[in-house]
Picture 1 (cartoon, one colour):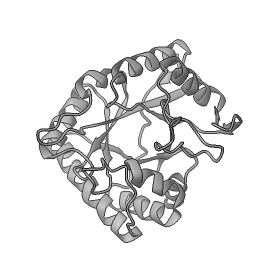
Picture 2 (cartoon, helix red, strand yellow):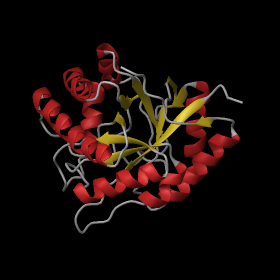
Picture 3 (cartoon, helix red, strand yellow):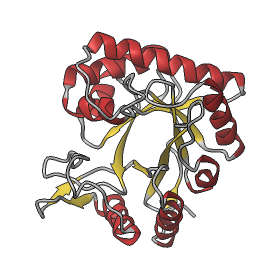
Picture 4 (cartoon, one colour):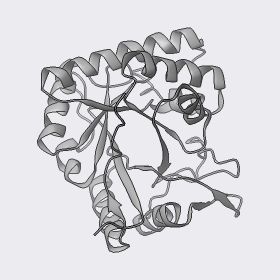
Length: 259
């Protein structure tokens, strides 16, 4: 029997590269329904991309490209003065790289979600958002574009006729305008798993989130991001999944529309 509420749980994966190991990919996959795989610019490398794609297929988790800025040292979380044309090229390049591994393993690319600073810049910069949406449209027009709920990125995708998913965050706090609190602020992250779970339940069921200014902000929750690189990421993911299921919320990735 279906429930009136359905949400996707996504996680950023494949962020190890070379001799550097990050995240709990294999352990966290049983708790999520879609994965965003780093494409080599902010993290990841070809071998890690292939192995992560294989793991996702083994766990029946929807696979997405996670293109970021070319900034390994800053993990793609530092803003760069990139033009829309440069952003378009970066995203096309990275989607193409991951899609090749997905096809080589017999899978299908499900979605695209920009990473870090590129994601946040595209949330408010309409020209950058349009360039990213066009890159998705021209490479994989039936892929779902994940973007911050209510952002310029989601609006750009909708204008082009791309299927979109409004994304919310379990472990981040929000500002009154619907943007995420900057990681430079001490109150940017939610570390209490019960608080995070209740924030997610409210976003899914009520379409609201309490801002840091103390007022409710309307929000659409199609997909929830669970970060996989924190020290307690696994326990966090397990708890949030359990709470959502207890609340009668169905967990499933969005089904791409045929094009």
